[in-house]
Image (tube, rainbow, N blue to C red; front, top):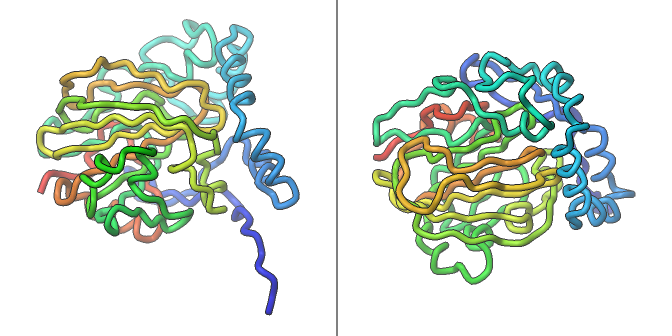
Length: 308
């Protein structure tokens, strides 16, 4: 019998479908070489402990991104990522450090959305996967390790997780090129929130393909929302390598559709939203691509589903 082999990251960036252009592309992953080295077989144990199990490196990256000396990286990042400065609310010259550029605001109207209350909007610029119906309370991704809603919400939250049995879920992966502020997908009210300490594994698809259980192991912030037309929703912000902070900008209480909820500081990261059974029907095109394991490039505010 052949010996079992340890999985390796697939060559090339992830395959993503651009919804607006109607075509697939291979995503350019910043730091791709370092990520492959860190997760290679000979170094995986040591590198994971040094880089991802310890917060030191993410803090150092965050410190640098907050320093004025990091301003010199802004123009390079804009060119490398192909960003449209016309979307920025503030001129590039006004950014005092890389982080101010990273969690920049956009001009009014740059991310339009359908105000109809039954329509569910994307909370962020992201690469989106939808899971229309959970197997009980378990999500089984096409790539990566399965996880339960209970593990996602953290220890001692079994009662909260039980509300989402047979429900639906979306994973929104943000990349460095994306607008890093995120918003409420529909109108409603915050019910409660909590923080779960954990590791800072990368949420890069290269890491997920190795079976890392990032949604149950990474640092997370959870907010339970009571949406007016879509029932209770668990809104989970997942920390990752290089994410120097998850900042909440909305006080607990009522919120309007697409009001800002918060932002990620330097580093890409992920949002996971969980809905109760029968609360939302996702758009057919998103379901088709997700079944094939293909993420869909979505802009903040785009309609992704509706109340049945």
